[in-house]
Image (tube, rainbow, N blue to C red):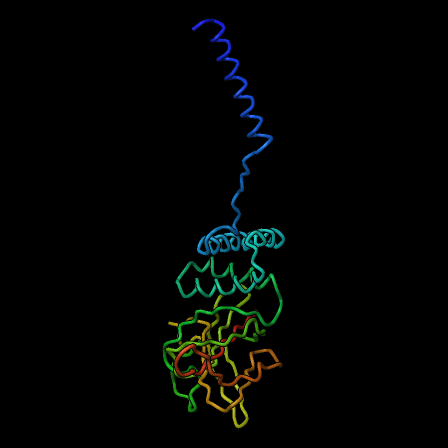
Length: 255
């Protein structure tokens, strides 16, 4: 190879490199899209929610928590957080995560009615109403002077349950379930009382009351003079088969 040919090879290589860099950087640069939490799968998005909720429980920085939640592009963050706390409760996840999720959801909104997807187990004895004739038996110690507000009301459709129920979930301000809380239910011709904590396998803050068709019920929570009214048996629609009666879940937040 002559010196001239070698020079031309070097010159051509240099010009090709310069043109390639110019084209890649200026004419047609490669766009790099960084992934955000909203691009993650549902499972990893839920892990992200749990992590930021635990961080919020330690810092109480609601502004930062809101900014982090916006990255998920979820229009119903409160609903999703409450639903996730119930899912984690049923799955036996750490109490720290469950409390943090419920706490952040509660602090994000003071609305009385929020749509959540509860995961309370629908099996077990029919009711936790107080017995008609008191009998000597251990019972949870009542909570002193509580004041509870309705946090969520949701219709439950479970084809495995044939008995319609009014279900209660009583939580404190840290989303810890509270046993021994007395709730009163009224209907046109009577009233009854039932307590949380009598079915610990379903949760220390869980209670239920069996409804009858054609009756309309109202539930009073401790310390609240305004009842949750117009609770009655409503059928759940199904794509195929016979409709079945649904239940109601009332989640209350206490002190």
